[in-house]
Length: 406
Image (cartoon, rainbow, N blue to C red; front, side, top):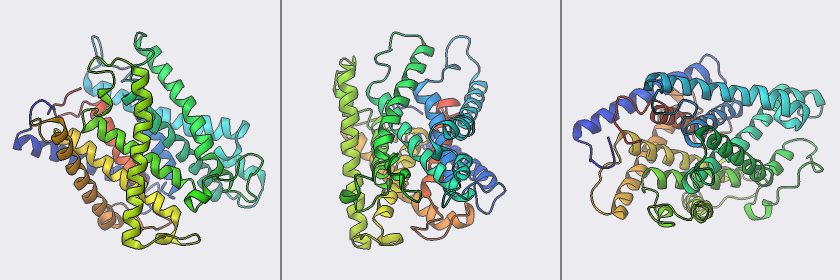
């Protein structure tokens, strides 16, 4: 399937069958590792969520920042199956190293306590029993690596290889990774670190400022930032996958001149657009459930509305990736604006169907808690897990057995 040629009916059926097969594999892996009714039961939910977010960050690193390096396509490269398996193993290894090596046993022990459950327990403070310690450390990892994913995808869409476009693949990969990591730490320290500081009793006022957005958002929870960050990621994915990189490709023309300007405009443009999407979702929830209020529980809690905006954006991302990879972007005719509208409509419809599937069939297939706004359930966990599978299938294995453009 390519963007240049519209898929045939047989192509749509083949793409749908491949996606359903991938979804079945995903649900099987979910049952093995994460389902509360499964075998390993890692979904607590924040512990399982942190593992999946770090895994997705690792996949994004190798597919977006590294462009498949050190197993990139080209002369003398491995066959697609070997390359895909190699990159998958590298992603799993990187995720394991980041969680259990770098953060649990280095940064958490010798730098920032809350990144290590063992270091939190060793303090002996109130709430430092192992379950709460692991959930709090996992929350910090979710925030940090969500920030990394957001900036990595935005950097690729806006700056691309600039300013290292003349460097070798390894130098380019390392440079982008280090730069995105640096900006991720800076963004995390302002947007999310203050919330982690108030997870403990007493709040860590000397290490983290009080959440500065509390008056604006009616909550001290950083779900406020997670909501618009994931919505901004949805805008980036929609632009890259369905809109043929419009409107950002207009900056610098087809020859991609002025990469710095394009990168800066893309970053701020996707943030603003993502925030508009975020507010629109919040207003929609207010029309349906009424206004949230400080001290409200579950559906009435402001922090849940922000988290739910992120959850809905996660389903939209899934819909966009399905349209892009398994439905051949639907068609190639007409002008870009019409193509983008049709594809976006299809992605929104698929996202709504997937959300309905999650809440209707999730308790039986995924072992999730029935209903919406349950503290023991975080739909972003499964949607990010499915997104990881799609990115691995598309970027590492070339979406085999489908034929897609690079």
